[in-house]
Length: 87
Image (cartoon, rainbow, N blue to C red; front, top):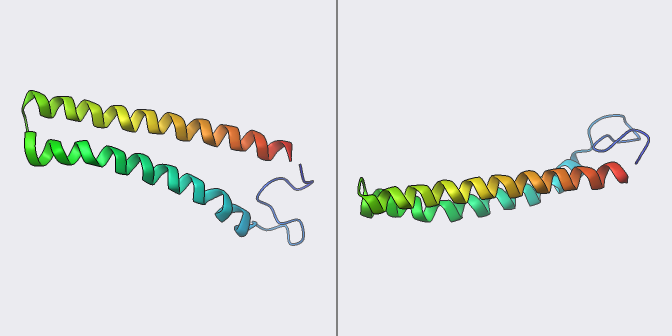
């Protein structure tokens, strides 16, 4: 690990915006992936099925996709933080 820690520029002591942006792009990609995956059953629920039982199942599917996506994103954040701490 660098003496000043991750995301700190060792020359100026300020934030290293290049490293912050480099670490943010994969997170944005994961968030957009799971949001777009959850959007399809949600749109089906709104446009086609409404308050029916199938609409309820599609709502559950949407929530399941978002819950799994949240878990995967949190695991990625923790794993990446451990990697950065070991640098």
